[in-house]
Image (cartoon, rainbow, N blue to C red):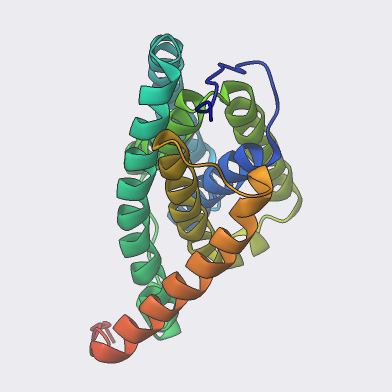
Length: 245
């Protein structure tokens, strides 16, 4: 029986890959937008923080575009195996971030309070979070592109960015109430699902029903990740946060 035929469908669309790119970008960029709104403090303006976040995201985007162009020139089978490893590793990283998000969500409301910040600090903070969160998203997007779905990665990321900008413009106050822990839970489960799916393909295995095999994998990892989060939350004491009177 012949092994799998490796092609490089750079200009094709793949729904699961597009969904992964969309959710990961939405997850990471939601944190950027939420922080920008949080940084405005008493000044009532988000312009400095927003400019910093846009600048940081743009810098990472330019670098990632060049890196992606180089990646897709490498052998597809090796890229698929490498992508599986990268996604699994980042899945572990995002799992830690997911756990922290659930812990923060259970803290008293007073623990989330923050004061205002100067314009320079707002810009610097916005730039920093824009770079950090963009890098985290780009790691996954490059993994998708390396797996032969560059177009899906780009379209998914752009769609998430446009949606988030529109939502932020329409609901200024509610954007900070977006349930980031849930987004991260879904994103982490998707990363592990794709890592397992592509890892098996790189090893020469074929999934029954093709991409539909991602559905049970996602549901399985969703249960495992959520269960692990709850287990760790219960096994560690809550962090005591001191607040000033």
